[in-house]
Image 1 (tube, rainbow, N blue to C red):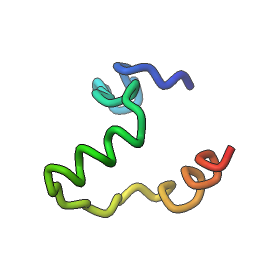
Image 2 (image 1 turned 90 degrees about the vertical axis):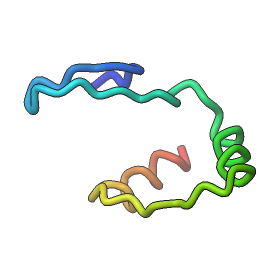
Image 3 (image 1 turned 30 degrees about the vertical axis):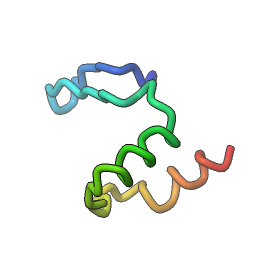
Length: 57
């Protein structure tokens, strides 16, 4: 699967948009802290396992 900024998910017939796909994580963290944006925990079942695994690669 290719993670492009915009993709069509055929199984769910939904357009999926990643508006911050090219933003650096450090820039996002700084902006969130500066704007005092609350962090909402992810409900994604893969969030705690696969994402952390790939983040360390």
